[in-house]
Image (cartoon, rainbow, N blue to C red):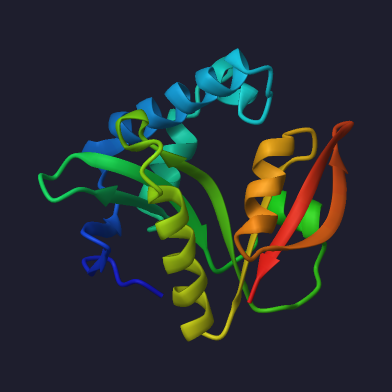
Length: 176
């Protein structure tokens, strides 16, 4: 997997591990995205608006799971959490199937970079990156987010079924 100080290029953007000093930048992108979703009636990240996730984010950064994507001027364009070990959340959704996989969470593109295909470019990079490492790429989204479900299916992710957590259904997707 990506080493702690390693940087990789993706179509003019740099992907690297987020640093603790960037905690607020990552959180701001996530909360902004959660607000946009709620305005559209989508509760995908509602918990980000109701809970303080600073400690979770700091833990993900410290563990080397939170990635930040920077444009050529060093502006944060996106962030995502990637782990080659299933979290408790992942086990609740996917079970313990023993498959080698990376789990993608909190994938967000900054509003300044929306409508520029950055999300698609990053998903393509992530699929290629995990394939090179011999693992599947897994992600989930709330089942009633029709737009996001269609987006993942249109971009090479295979629907693996759904799982319920606290009464909410989540769609499970995998790419090889």
